[in-house]
Image (cartoon, rainbow, N blue to C red; front, top):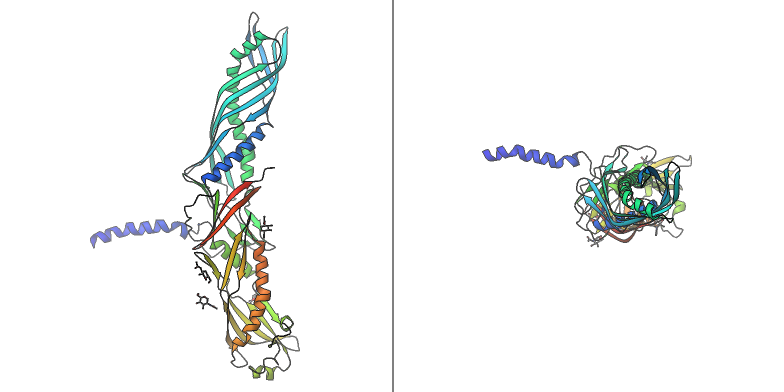
Length: 481
Ligand SMILES: *[C@@H]1O[C@H](CO)[C@@H](O)[C@H](O)[C@H]1NC(C)=O
Ligand SMILES: *[C@@H]1O[C@H](CO)[C@@H](O)[C@H](O)[C@H]1NC(C)=O
Ligand SMILES: *[C@@H]1O[C@H](CO)[C@@H](O)[C@H](O)[C@H]1NC(C)=O
Ligand SMILES: *[C@@H]1O[C@H](CO)[C@@H](O)[C@H](O)[C@H]1NC(C)=O
């Protein structure tokens, strides 16, 4: 007893601590995981991008003093230094737990061309040269973070480079000068280039990689009133084998965004890493969408007699109701009815392993359309149904399709006496199948966009439904420009 009492505070403390993230509502709605395979692909593509970037740069001029035999010190100048060819051969991109990524490039090669000039009072020589820089290796740590706007950030936190060998080849028939350069300038060139490589990498990270990462959409329009918030809820998380990015994944009303009362569930991603990327999309994403569409009145509908097929044995007229609601026909002879449907609360999706369903509950108010063109409420029905949803996903979007379930109609209130509401089931089924389902299915076919960087496409797609979330796996293709 005493031991238990003593342990209680620490148990409580442990419970409090472990429940904190949920209590703060900080769970992401969507998690994107890049596996080691994905990082390997990114490293290859990054290397190609860097390679073509290198071909476009001009290295700064460099100048210095040189000892000229029998003449004393003179000055030299290398200018118009262009990278003429470049082959970056091996690269690796690895996660660095709790920091970010480490990029290493090895066994690479560049050739630089330019003009040289040597001066010593009266002496003035010039020509062109060609430098081969061999055995280049570069190692950069990339620190990943997120801005207050929720966009990802990347900075090169450290960089080191090495060059095995530099060979200068100069034009002209000046053997003595060539030797001079071999002895005095190659090592200097090596040193200068070595420091320039990291400068260039830092510049490329801040002026190419960072803007590219920021092409990740923070908010994306879904349609005229809904948008999705893809801001990062925390800095990207690196573990030994993968990189995970946590997105808010909230659907909001574009004209009047209000705080969401739902909490995103904790997602435990399966330990899969056969594909390059995985996305876990929690029910939070779909349910915040449901809230927005519900608020917009998207789920409201109205049925009038002109929408009923001509061969229906029940029509929305008081006359047609006479056999089973005699009082209705008596009180309102020869008038039309209108059924107004709404869904009192936004329907929430049920995710269970392998299945996705939603059980919308509708209320339908029946009105008599009076000759004065006002509407008189006469009875209220409720309609319950089980709908299963089929989801698929293509190169960039999740799309869906609803499969109708059986509807169950009940009479809730009536000013014209009780009657068997099941008689209206066929009529409601007809309307729901022919009007409501197509409307929702058209919307679901438009799809829900995944947070993808520019020019990234997905293929080899796989989709699983887990408790509380969808789990999508894919390989990635970067569409080079
Ligand atoms: C939808 O219908 C309900 C019930 O008639 C109503 O209270 C609600 O205001 C409607 N919503 C919109 C956005 O029209
Ligand atoms: C999914 O739902 C369908 C229809 O309700 C059912 O037939 C099927 O057995 C369910 N599958 C799983 C894995 O629960
Ligand atoms: C929907 O499914 C639930 C649970 O499977 C069941 O209790 C309910 O009766 C079903 N409703 C309809 C309208 O079929
Ligand atoms: C993916 O689905 C969206 C929405 O249905 C569609 O617009 C797009 O063309 C599809 N893309 C491919 C490659 O099928």
